Length: 119
Image 1 (cartoon, rainbow, N blue to C red):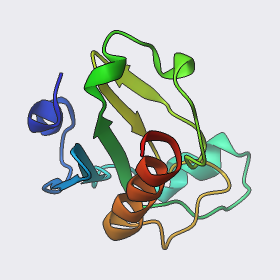
Image 2 (tube, rainbow, N blue to C red):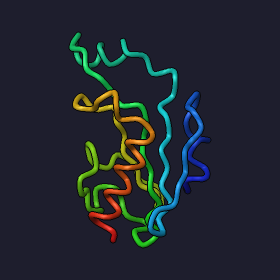
Image 3 (cartoon, helix red, strand yellow):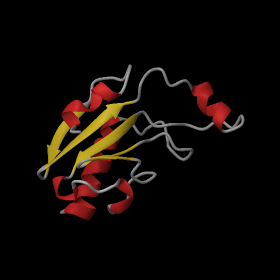
Image 4 (cartoon, rainbow, N blue to C red):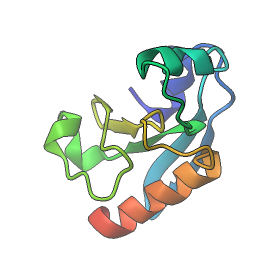
């Protein structure tokens, strides 16, 4: 799978923001609108916590075929949670995620990862 195909796999989400940074294709994909705050309240047994607003993806061709648990996590928020071929992703739906973690935050976070781990 590539970033160009990512929206096919999610329903009701906004349009992805795709950029290239230092030779790596990165993407911020808004969360689907069908995610309801009550869903998280049920999961956390009534505790209310904030959540981010987007997932982040990066194409790393040199790591093709690796699982997300096999690549360096660096400073990725919550760690990598997705891999397919050479596409790796993370989400902002953790209990320690914050509402300011939007598409621009995700892109900045991916650029910091490139600078930290891949540059």
